[in-house]
Amino acid sequence: MPRPAGKPPLSSATAEFGARVRQRRTELELSQEALADICELHWTYIGQVERGQRNISLHNIIRIAEALEVDPGQLVSGLAV
Image (cartoon, rainbow, N blue to C red; front, side):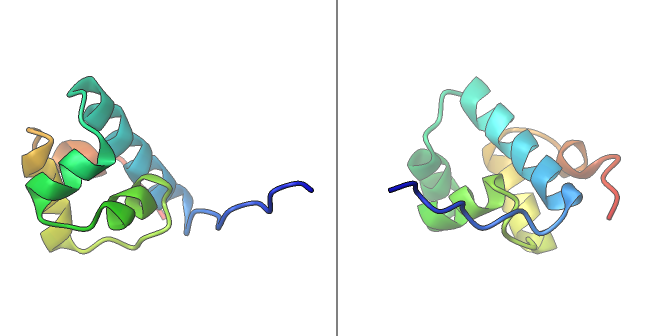
């Protein structure tokens, strides 16, 4: 029996933001769990962010950017709704 498709991204902006987070996380060789620990967030939340399924708050953008050692602007630059 085929597996049902997952929940789609909320928008192209959340999908792109999540892709940027995932790319940087993999560059740093961090698991979702390790990134979540650094950010003091739950690993399932990080997974939802990476899949574009969360409308993430400014506070959490900053937390994630700090953990990824990037300026928050790098994660949001050029995004459009």
